[in-house]
Length: 388
Image (cartoon, rainbow, N blue to C red):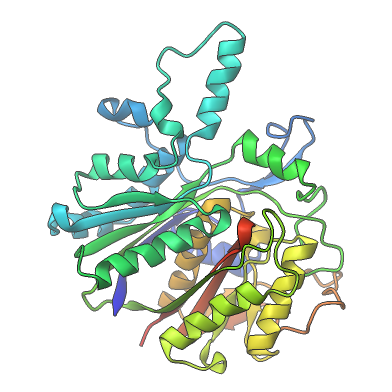
């Protein structure tokens, strides 16, 4: 069994565990604010901003200059347990597996903008925009020499990075894994989603009949995994790749269902054993429809479920790690409060199967929780964490 020994997260809900849980319980996200900087049209939309202070990249690692990498430094530093674990580890046996979909793309866009104006940044280095750079940077900064690589499968990137870390540990290739991911706000993906007409121009309302798209957010999250017994276990995971469409999910959610059932099978539990289900719940018409169908076929209306993307924004490649970190914090803090999925005046879409969405402020407890993520290209993953 693989266990989680340290967790850190920075997102629109906050940058410290108790701050994150307190804001979640109040249905507030200090970092979710209007911003006109990102869309080419200049239209102000709500974006989820990280709330922590980001440190500077060390001068000897200047070629890795990116907001993503600064965010990874910040979350590592925010949890003292990471440094303590690292200080007692064989650095040649520590793996680093991260997920991202943007890496340093915003810094590259800034460089191109300056270049076109005849003012290129002389300090810009191309390495930071490479998808493998977050793992390479974190390994160089921490001095680890074990496997270090990045997974980039759109919105399942970092949940698959966690699963990769579990597999490396179970295969005996490493003794510990630092897993997670980071994606920060960048014009390229934001305007790409706008071109797909996937952005909400009102308010992100997953599973509502009024939903009109996603709110983009940024986040960074890290988890320390090892085979040594710890407070939270990775009880099971499931993955599938249905390849239904490059940018649209299978409308029946069969790939999503396969991933969910795979996680339950590996964990050796029945659906009713899950105490809380963190949904992918992006707020688009297609995702929420297919996800509700998949969830209803597996769980019926018996398992408490909600999406947190109305508070954090959709953090793209970091979503899997951010939401896994969130359920880990919920498991560590029994009785934490989940907010209602939708405001009182906003009804659930009556066309959706009647899954058990959180309808009022609810204290959640229990020993088993699941998080699901689904991505472009039909990439699907689900992960179960437990405290027993």
